Length: 295
Ligand code: NAP
Image 1 (cartoon, protein in one colour):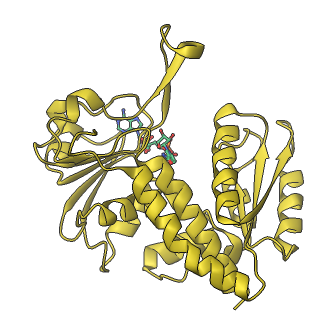
Image 2 (tube, protein in one colour; image 1 turned 135 degrees about the vertical axis):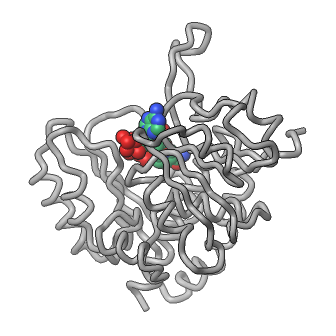
């Protein structure tokens, strides 16, 4: 039995995927099989795992997928040339370049090179702009969209809530703030965005109705930073040394889970919270791309 205040990301992600099945069936009836192509550069172990999970979920849904792997020392020009080919290849409705990229490749150049209507990761400047403007026609980045969906489906309202986000990264914190501050259903929150220059960060945290930790700092959020009854969302994925664990390390989030869980009103486990939602939203964006490109 899981404790009553856990938000089960795996179960909610399964609901999101189940809701895609009728849309996939409608596409199939028109002879369309959505196609999602991945690009990895180098052999970063975490990237291999992430792409592997995304491919597996795609296969379970009947979404065609393929992964292109470039060597660690590939140039930016080589990657852009590959993206140009994939942009023009009609069998692919969605293109995802897995982060992190090696130093010689500028992520902003890569994201801007993907066709906006195939940009299922939502990082193209046009899709980021649409997100900021509240235009629902664009693609929303998968992790922020997954966090929004997770709480909505868990019965927690963002409307009017004071949401404190720790971390202003371009992948999670910044787009999540843009998503939740919209005057729109499933949003309409008051957002405080904290970062490394924030003064008295703990005091901001204690004022949160919903606290989202997306910094990449192991177990940063401690019990004294959480108002009793607040909702806590742990986005961080951090590998820490653990001589007792298999391989000498283990994964922890940005929240000191054991201490915070008894105080929180609701809390996401990690793993099993935000991660599965990120994958589910990628599948949703891919279905949307296939629908829009073949309409
Ligand atoms: P990022 O771009 O590196 O951003 C980290 C942010 O945290 C920055 O804004 C940084 O502040 C802030 N920060 C770092 N240390 C801090 C401190 N001690 N006090 C206050 N702020 C601090 O990271 P990201 O790409 O957004 O990812 C954040 C985390 O989410 C990572 O652990 C990543 O692995 C995880 N993640 C998980 C998923 C998932 O699906 N579960 C998906 C994506 C990312 P400055 O801006 O001032 O430097």
